[in-house]
Length: 249
Image (cartoon, rainbow, N blue to C red):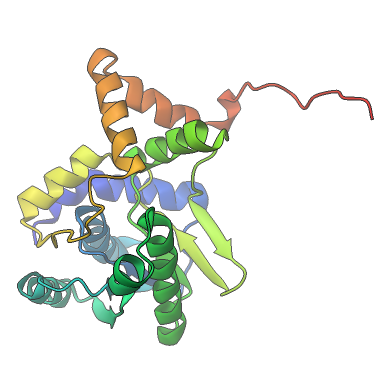
């Protein structure tokens, strides 16, 4: 694999790891490998990063098979890539698709699906002795999550770079929070990574997809808008919000 195509992403991972102390010596890191572009690039980049990281760590990848079927050829290519990267690979077969769409018939399936997938990932992490779970959220996801929370929940909020999950003792890390989606797509195309198609019926019909399109639309008129949104979220010294209300009881 030509690692020159991962340089931008590797630089972002190094910066995030240093800014938020994401990786410690002796960590056993498992990547939540959906097979999408983000998790593929994250896995490939971490496989390279471990070679020069000042904090030595071991790396594995966990793919949750949700039970949709129809992607066996792509899964075979995924297994081959993991062998090439020297990353221990695990597949966890589940019936999440059947539960969410056939049994529960969820009108808003994303929330339940996410919880079940995360639960399956956590269970496998504990089984293999991983102490950290790495997810492929990128800088664009930071902005989209912020807008989702602002508009739908009335909160100024987004996910954290590092989160400790007390129930399982696992630490969740997001090493690509500084990487832009355009650079990730570029790496996927140049490296010809085997992206698994998303068979989910709700794909491209979610609120997140709406936010992605909204931010893209804003960026057509204001080219630097996306970078400013991300900068505002990641720079707490720039926060300037109302203080708590001085209500008398």
